[in-house]
Amino acid sequence: MNKPITILGFAGSLRKNSYNKSILRAARELAPGDAKVEIFDLEGIPPFNQELETQMPEKVKEFKAKIKAADAILIATPEYNYSIPGVLKNAIDWASRPYGDNSFQDKPVAVMSASMGMLGGARAQYHLRQTFVFLNMHPINAPEVIVNFADEKIDEKDRVIDGETREKIRQLLESLIAWTRRLRKE
Ligand SMILES: Cc1cc2nc3c(=O)[nH]c(=O)nc-3n(C[C@H](O)[C@H](O)[C@H](O)COP(=O)(O)O)c2cc1C
Image (tube, rainbow, N blue to C red; front, side, top):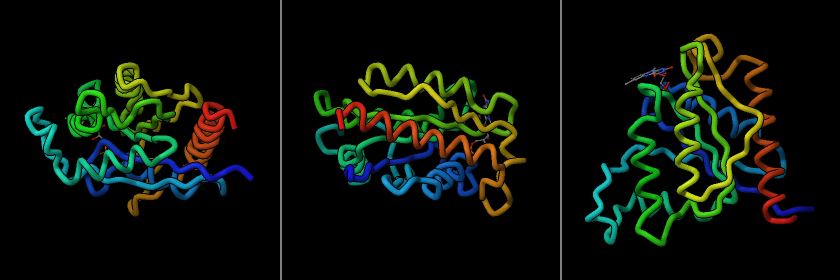
């Protein structure tokens, strides 16, 4: 049997009842037997300061180590002003540094987004994909998990209750796992 795939997931929201945290937890629940999703909370990552690159804050060191140890990355992003939240960009900027030590180098990645709006954060996903180019990551293209009207699909206990959304998340994981194994020529 192939070695299990480890997926590091993080959400671009610090909100306790974040819809994006909810879809990430659903991914952890729905992961197939040959994969495990670990969730990293971005809370506590300070604002990026290039002067501190050579003395990385402990939380950033932990984040970089988890990314490097993972076989693949799963990001759940809110959409803020048609783009990704500063919290997410800030964490990505830290983990991409110092120059020559980009923790995301060569990693397969999948994206999900959730919003109460009709477009479900789709615009933020496309901004994030642009960043993957410079990070030299390898995103999967399909399926797209764009959770619109999130307040109708996630209940007051922060559980994803919409069957179609759960199925899309399951398919996304399957696709990310297959892509990861393909890149490794397994
Ligand atoms: C500063 C700010 C800007 C926002 N801009 C957008 C937007 O451009 N598009 C959108 O669909 N929702 C927008 N929203 C609504 C967020 O998508 C919504 O608050 C969402 O629940 C945030 O994700 P979370 O639940 O994971 O925290 C914005 C919210 C904030 C606070």
